[in-house]
Length: 85
Length: 215
Image (cartoon, rainbow over all chains, first blue to last red; front, side):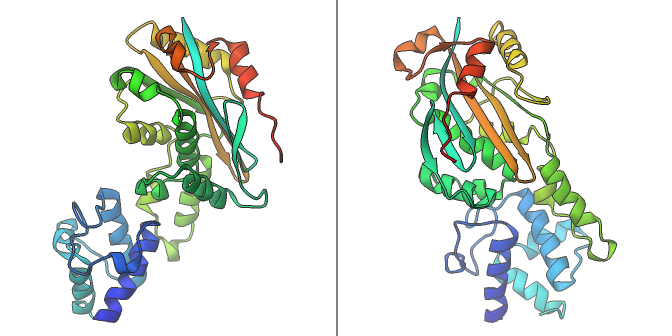
């Protein structure tokens, strides 16, 4: 799980162009939206693309994103639960 | 009467403010490298900058340089500042990027973050958001910097509720890029300005051609 979390941090920084953020700045349980990384609605769409592009996971119902994208850890848990880690 | 009170010009990997080159990077640097270096030179922290496309970065930076040593944002009501920008390539550079991401059906991953920049006027929004400017705005596509159009449209806006305008040219098309942004205000700000040129076509063109580029 830890390796997947670290991999996700790097992928998110690259995919979302978070040039001023380093992997160690991202806490696995910190919220991705609002406080924490302060991502916006376009970033949410990019995260959906990231899951599909890198892990072959297609989120059919956008409402699921609210749970999946709570934090890096919830993303990692979701990927693992889908058997894609 | 309206006056041009500050301007910035970016091209050839150099930044000029009021006719003086204030920043230059290696002439072999790519546009992306140059824009990042110019952003660092400005010393601001605005993480959203890194998410912008090249045209928005260019227009954003040129505006920041034009505003840097100016009282423009303090002296004018943000709800009465207009933004008028123009170029010839519209958002073609980002349009190409988006087209590339949807051209291969077996590798079809269009990026929402790229798609949102497939309109030329997004750069106006980025500048407005950065400074909380809520006045009138317009983006024109013309073959080259059209001083007559900018002059006329500025007068139209300033005859109504607009008191000041950020305006000019911001263009990215493959390896070619250039931005020229100038600030227009009314007479009240005269003593705070480092330049003070009456707004007219000949003065816009004079300032556009004023910088002596070193490379």
